[in-house]
Amino acid sequence: MSQFIDNFERKFYYLRLSITDVCNFRCNYCLPDGYKPQGSTNKSFLSLDEIRRVTRAFAASGTEKVRLTGGEPSLRRDFIDIIAAVRENRAIRQLAVTTNGYRLERDVAAWRDAGLTALNVSIDSLDARQFHAITGQDKFHQVMRGIDAAFDAGFDKVKVNTVLMRDINHHTLDTFLDWIRPRPIQLRFIELMETGDGGSLFRKHHISGEVIRDQLISRGWQRLPRARSDGPAQVFRHPDYQGEIGLIMPYEKDFCASCNRLRVSATGKLHLCLFGDGGVSLRDLLASDGQQQELQARIAASLQSKKQTHFLHQGNTGITQNLSFIGG
Image 1 (tube, rainbow, N blue to C red):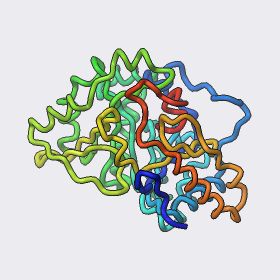
Image 2 (cartoon, one colour):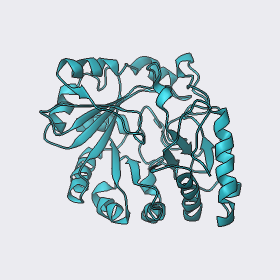
Image 3 (cartoon, one colour):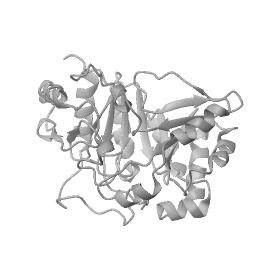
């Protein structure tokens, strides 16, 4: 089976695989009222064997990077087994996780031993009180110890995701820069995105990443080239800093032109865009090992309807009610 490619000649090297939509944090831009099950309460998340099969099908069609997302992926009791199952496939060169970091200190060494190659931790403020206010959890110091534990476990770089919010953290750039000066952390500012549940928050707190980019360029930061399986961040480096800055700006012109990633939800639906209108169910083809070619064919056929761009500029957020729903 040939590589997954859409009508706009975009090739897909990167799968974002949600393994649960449950989260134990209550971030104000995602789940301010805490986790509530979506739809049927008796649905089940993808099993270990289903995860093995779906990642095998993607790898056979050119996918070389998988990111485990949620919700909070480490809430799965079989999380270490999931890491090991995905890494059984030699074609998958990078296996990453996006986590809120609350289990890092305890478990990150075991995750690395199981085959995890990269780590993104969500930290929206370096002030413990503000962190608590944003996340609903008084776990700032625990998460920071977890990042130290990740370096101790052998990760040479850790990515930190920060949702950029006007009047909350956009004015604290210097604090973040001081933090990454001696540490190999890639700090990624992510523009606040509008979701079905978050319209009023978006209108109050959205600010363009260009504000940060202009400040960086004026201070001598240089933009780096992008590898084919990288995510959408524009990455900047400065000779005086161990760390890097990444900017994810989905409202910028041509953001979607370099799209290289597909998403599969925790219940086995293929999503061609985080803000698309629906999902293509793959679950009926994940029941046994003998359906891989059929599975690849369904994914390839679905790609023919992938749109050229999202419609966030028009305020159309698709089915994404919150960012835990498909995995951000």
